[in-house]
Length: 565
Figure: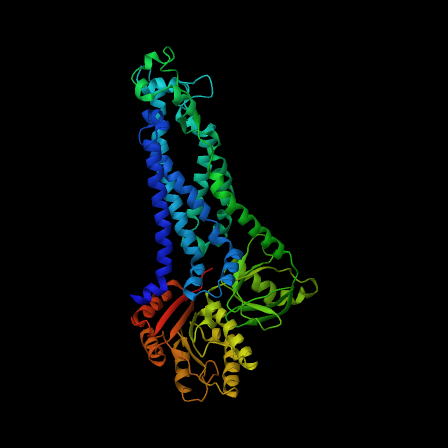
């Protein structure tokens, strides 16, 4: 339980505060519109539907203020750098930005549904009141101000229908547009579409521009009306509400006048919109900087390595960049973890061919076509770098790095940087031990990374630190012919798959066993666990971090961190 609090306590507190603000805003504005006297006559037509429409509108303003902040990557990287002296548990909240972005989106969807349903009731009641020819209070109120701007009922003639109002007024039309935009954005953000049709998700998500534009002008029509202050001073609704026949004929009951409330949404969303515009301008500026491709390497398993140089490019271990290749697609930007170390002369990425865009990148830069195009080199644009959880790998005395497949890339950067630090006798390095696990399906996938591990093996031995790096490679897929080959060469001094001294393990890791051994080897230690891999693996590892952390504050504690893009 104590480790759960360490890993998730701050996140839980953020969620509780966020939910608390939503509940407060909903209750406060529901009470405001349900009981305030200036809305008394409005409620005579709409009933409680007025409060049910306006309370979620206030929550929508608050959540629309938040929705853009988690996707301002430069802001998050700046905050991560500014919080370098904060505890890792505080900094890693920034790595949950996409999760929070989704939660805010779901809250926006919930309040949108409540807001729309309540307004449907409002417009039906407005229509019924307008159609009434009697002297009931709601019918009389519907006829007030029909020939001027002091009306209460937006449906001001018997021929006007709620549908007509919906598609001809600013409030109605923008409401339809932003609702459709929200539906498309949310449905195209499901895991199935995002993973299988990333371009669909990417392009439809930019409907947020239309969503925010419609949101800002949604209240300009001032559909929700209230009695004016001047009218309330001379027209006491407690006295006049039952004397509608005397309205305008006696001094105590002049005809009431009404006005619409001023639009408020722009006050909530203006600051994050400006911030996001600056974010996009900064990305645009960086994307125009010249990027030089110094080297391309084709690795097994259709993995392409690009070594790049860019003026004033500064990085930290484990960070990632976005890459665009205009000759493939003018608009598509894809994230890739940097596999180089900050000490390298250039920065590099490894791109696995696993989709239309990556296939095109592999063909363009990894084959004969690139040899032919060397004189006219395809242009590359880079945006970044941006911070991730792996930046904190050096903030622990013991770090556990776990990569699945191409998910090894952030840890290539970490391991390279360690080599440089020890080569330069960096005594300030806090990390004393690293455990590295790499899980792959194919033997070929190990080839491009085994050179780095082999170099680390020999260099750590020369530096007198042979136990600094403990690594285990796991092969989860092989055929019968390979199995026989592994068995025959099992007694060789080096591994038959990688050529390393550490032998490859076959099958999946027993995480309970691994965590138990690590916990025994490092009592009274805070250990950072870093994963770049699929969600099911993340759940299993998170369970182990909680299981093998001690309740005693001075005991061993595992802090779980997962890469998120």
